[in-house]
Image (cartoon, rainbow, N blue to C red):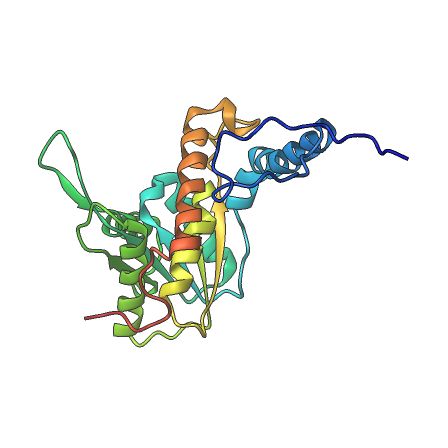
Length: 237
């Protein structure tokens, strides 16, 4: 019995010793749809839940309260209320030096926050000012480093520190502070939302949208690349 002849394939234009014909498996359109849905799911979750994730409030047992001075007068007053109600030993004002781009005025957020607290009636011996060096980059890290230095200089060894800051800045700022402070110190955070924050989703507010997008990049950069430089090691003099 004569078998059927095999179909003749056209000769390959490529040299056979360099290339070889292979059969591969290729996803069908339903599989591609599932793959696209799986890839889009984290993006959608972050779009709708990312701001809540970054705006973390996780209080540790009260010992020392650190407030970032740049959050404004209303924020400093809210931190004062947290300090009084929480039963903290000290409140530390943190912040870097700021220069007004249209003039010669220069001030430090930590110094300004301390003055606001003193005028609001906080006893001077309970307020610790931690001014950071003049820097245009890594201001969060420099502010955290200044807090570590002033606490070490005063012999304050807190078992827990709570960081008081604005909204979506909370999780990244806590991560930086936890890297700088001793590993024996628990670090919590309080995400304060000003009364002027517009309600609704973040994309309805240009201010909240800017904060959310910047902190998304900043948190990932800090988490993956360790931009804090130090990790629970004594700060340099």
